[in-house]
Image (tube, rainbow, N blue to C red):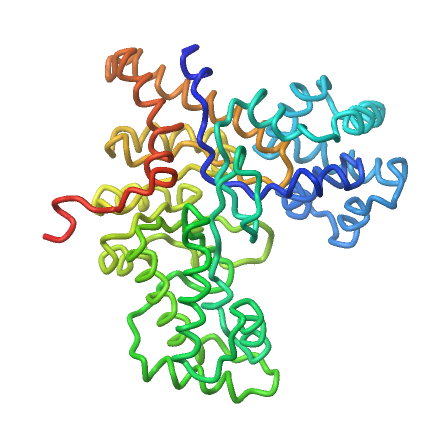
Length: 420
């Protein structure tokens, strides 16, 4: 369906470095490609971490890197991450395969493209992305291309006095009590609330997603152990009551100001993490408690995608997001999207977020997402489940309108049934 190609995407999630930093950086395609995602494939294929760091080092010559890169590229080019890269190199740099000579040509072409307007060219002109919602830890972004979310994970993931000192620096406040800490969180939130389109949390990389409702006294005991510390890191069980208490405070703030909350669930980037920490079912109590918060649940919850679909079927305030998923596994993303379209109202699904550090990854991922949406909807038209007009309308919703409504129009997450 050609109509799907013409839809300007609202990209729900990116980590793109600023164009200025990208242009100032070295033109080293191998270091760039291994700055994100593909590096994990290399590691799980057996590359030693120190060899990966050598490939990421722009001071090491291409010739010194090539044999190791070529050996592991051959093992990994079949993955979704490999496919994203191949599409980007084909369309943006005119190279159909990765060889020593093609990497040299790509390096030269990168040097030509590294000038102001590079991001606009790739994001707007080539990928046809209207805006990217970015999680980059700062608010000074190009507002024609990006809309920022911000994290308050450092407030929640408190484990030591050093962590507390960093929060004092961020909040510009001295923190001597739990009351002070809550005030600091509120003050930081107040400064950011009119500059952001939502809140992001990625704490499933560090702890389970189950945040119990804890009392002030329980949280205060944990805070006092941290405040009286001498630099040691407390065990998770010791600080969990405080962390849980603070997450509930943060969600209360999000609810008060009508800001959506993006939550990492499912697969974690990198190696040696604990997948069960990020099961979206662990969030049920938060969905129930904060009915006025729109929860944008990331990465299809993969591999818990069916559980996530069932949660969105039960909770009006839960939205399912395929960001990163088309790169993790294009085939799995198609199956998940097809099932979700049978299961859920079409306003509940967000079909694309690139989730890349480098803009070529955003482009390649967007191409796979468009192809997947086209194939899934075409299959439903062929089967008689949808007609063409219905399919195009759904494509507009899941690729653009749903994300616009959730993030850019700042509608409160309420409905007549939410408070029944």
